[in-house]
Image 1 (cartoon, helix red, strand yellow):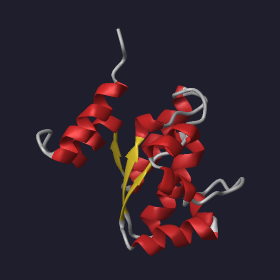
Image 2 (cartoon, helix red, strand yellow):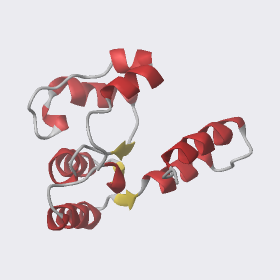
Image 3 (tube, one colour):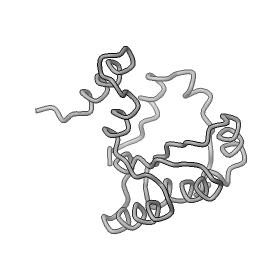
Image 4 (tube, helix red, strand yellow):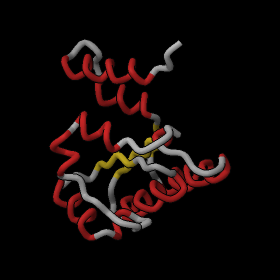
Amino acid sequence: MRPGPLLSELKDIAPEEFAARVQRQGVVNAFDDEHFAAAVKATGRTNLIIAGVTNDVCTVYPTLTALAAGNQVQVVADAGGSPSKIADDISIRRMDKAGATITTTNQLLAELAQNWTTENGSKIINILMELLPQS
């Protein structure tokens, strides 16, 4: 898990989206927050990509709720972590068993790019290169 909050980075990368984000306080399942649930519903999308700070809390409950509501969900498993390996493994297994597609950041970015030679593909490959460990 990457240390520290990413919010300042997100503000720099996507300032309008950062300003428009749904700010929740203390709700374990994001879908239990009426503003979050309404924002997701307002998109009209039923194919969701979900990631969280911790897979065993932040990711698992909204994923199970979204699946129960008939959505297709891809869980970006390496975007979050859990306090222990067993907690992470069990939560990922639980989401997989419930019908989520378990993926990684690199897999998801490659799937979204589809072709590295396009304009969007070139932008995404640059993000991937930034994620690679520097030697």
